[in-house]
Structure formats: C-alpha cells, structure tokens
Length: 455
Ligand code: TYD
Ligand code: MG
Image (cartoon, rainbow, N blue to C red; front, side, top):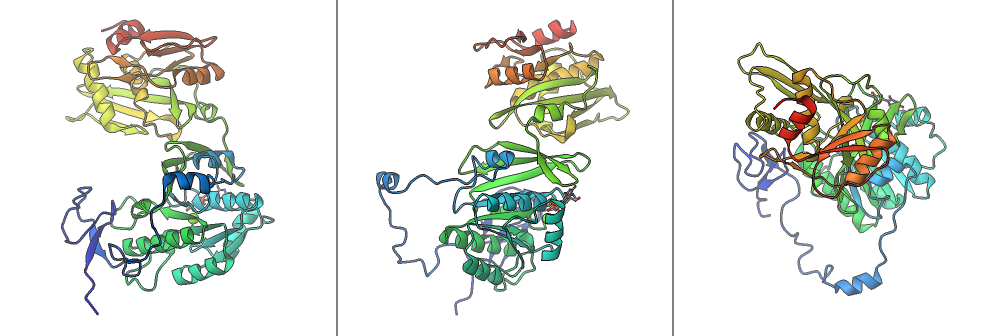
C-alpha cells in the first residue's frame, strides 16, 4: 500500500498545507497547524472516471428542476434567518459558545419542523436520550413527533440515517462525533472535519437536510467549527451575553438567503421565545437621556433595529490611555477618535475611552459611525443629546458624512418607537416621515458645532 501523504490543517481557519510551519500561511495565526489524519485532499480514486457529474445546460436545469420548496418551522425568527425556511438537502452549521442555548434552540426547531410535516431525527452526542426527554418536558414538547438518538459513532449514525431516512437530521454536537477510521480524539480538528464531511455528503446524496451544532472555542488549539464552515451551505451563529436574557441567531453565510440576517430570542424558564420587536427590547433598560448615551437607528439584515451606544470618557491614570470596546469594532473606534482629533480639534489624549453597545448586541454597520462619534462627544462634554433623537451616518476620514442605505426604514422604526427627531447625513433624498424632524449634517465638524456648540 502506498504511504499516505501527511497534510497539515490550521485549527483556526481550516487551511490545508502539505508542509508543517510555525505559522499558518492563510490566517497568520501562530502554532495552529496540526497533522491532519482525516480525509485526503484531491479527487478520490473512486470518483475518477465516473460520469456522475457531467455538465448540463443551465436552461435545461431551469425548466426541469423546480425551485427548492422550503419548509417553515413556524418559528418566524428562525425561518427568516434561514432565508424563508429550510431548503431540502441543505447543510447548516449552528455555532456558538457552550451553554448559550444551541441544544435548546435546536430541540425546539426539531419539534416545530416535525409538527410541520418533516420527518425529523435529533441525535445527541452530549446527552442521553433521557436527558433530552427531560429538556423536551421543560420546553413543553413531549408530544412532538421527533425521533431521538444518543450516539457518537459516525458509522452508527450513518446507519441510523440510512434506515430512518429522515428529511432533517440534527447532530448535536459535531465535536462529540468520531469516525473510527480517523486516529485522533473526538473533538480534534481531524475528527470534526472528517465527521462533518461524511455527514454532509451523505445527507446531500440522500436528499436530507442536516443541521450540525458546533461549539465555538476561542482557543485555536481545540477544534472550533471553523473548519466546517466551508462544507456547509449556511452558517448561523448563536450569540448572547451570559448575564442577558436575549440571544441572537445570526446568518454569517447563506447560499439560500441573505447573510447578516438576525433572529432575536429571549431565554426563559421554558426555553427560547421569539422577540418580534427587538428595538423595544434593546432600548428597554434606557432611562432619562444621559451624557454618553446615543440611540443608533440600525439595520440588521432586512430589518431596522434600534440600539443604544454608551460611552464613558474619563481622565486616564495610565501612560497609555485605555480604549475598551464591547459590541463594536475597535479599529473603527480608533478611526473615529482620530477624525475627532485631527478634523474637529477635539483631543482624546490622556483620556480613557469605554464604548459599549447596550444589552450585549453586536453592531458592525459603518452607519453607526456618527452615533459612536456622538456618544464619545456627549460623554466627553458631559452633555446629553436632545431627548427622543436617533443618530446614524457613515463617517469618512475627511470628516464628511456619507448617506447610508435604507434611510426611510430607519426613520420609520424610530418613529414607531416614539422618537421624534433624527441626526443624519446630508445628501441623497431625505424621505419625509411624518412626526420626525430631520437634522441633516454635511460633516462631523458641523455636527460638533450644531449639537455641542463647539468646534
Ligand atoms: P443549552 O441549550 O444546553 O446550551 P448549549 O447547547 O449551547 O450548550 O442551554 C443551556 C442554558 O440554557 C443553561 O444554562 C440553562 C438554560 N436554559 C434555560 O434558561 N431555560 C430553558 O428552558 C432551558 C432548556 C435551558
Ligand atoms: Mg448543547
């Protein structure tokens, strides 16, 4: 037998190389390459010479194959994130921190899909069937026509899938599965990769959908689900802060729907319940207008969402002042501070800066630039922004404010939640939204002068 060539896989990004190195070429992380004992790279001997995938005309496909029919779960927040329901024969990865609520979400999803007519199989590698049953009891799902399995051996699972032939199989979690032809321990990158590959290809061949649950670990040495991301159609992340009740299901990749879509849930004593009006939830802890607090009218996926930015600026006892950000990009904060200093003449040297998005929400839209700048200024000047005001706009390095997408949706959402004015960029066409007063600013300097009477 020919000697199998050794390959190495990066535990952080999943890049495969034939040579070991101290640093991954692809993601530049140190000490993440490990020997990959899993599937070898390149076409298999078996598939060579077969005609299975002979090309067809696109037009033939258009006429012969109807568009995929999706099945909704009935959980609207989940269906929207999936792009309108579950596509047959699709592979989905649901990643998240341990304990965030993945098993809870997927057991509820399993029950809902089953109630909507999909033959559903939930395989737990982490809990015994009795424990899953107890969870189902707590969630009030004991009557759902879901089949449960407690298995970790990949071969056994494939056999079960073969005999049961479900429409949807949920594998909780991919880190507990192990293939006996791969030598390394369950949870290692090789095992996770091999198991995910086997499961997704098997499912596609049999026309079944598969949802893989993956624990995210910060430590690159332990297999995160990163290596699995390339193998699936859809990647969803389940996020949230431990201390907070609500959870966000976020699509970071979706072949069958928009990425960046979010679904919002609240963890209750009886499982996850849907939050149909996230803005109200994110703003619920807000009191009187206070310095450093600014409401940003954002867009998450296809939906407007209002969130509160909170900033604190204080004299620093350190030679290197602190810049601490939660829920927003640290690099982007540095840029906004630089524009405030260089273009508006407002220094932050010698001041510690803390920026936080209330409620543990993460914001990645550049449209939040102006809201961040406003929160920083408001904190620094110890002056609250006018009450009932939302802020949005993208900032360029010249301090000019750029119009952002979906202005009307942002304004309407703000109006719906009781806000009466908006500070936003000039330019583009401003939609008239009844009951909203618009202050349109060409640049940050004008904003500083108009709102804080400085600059
Ligand atoms: P779980 O779904 O087991 O998390 P994961 O699969 O991501 O590791 O959820 C664990 C947490 O959720 C646990 O701390 C208990 C809590 N929980 C509730 O608050 N309410 C519930 O109804 C359930 C089932 C769990
Ligand atoms: Mg779990």
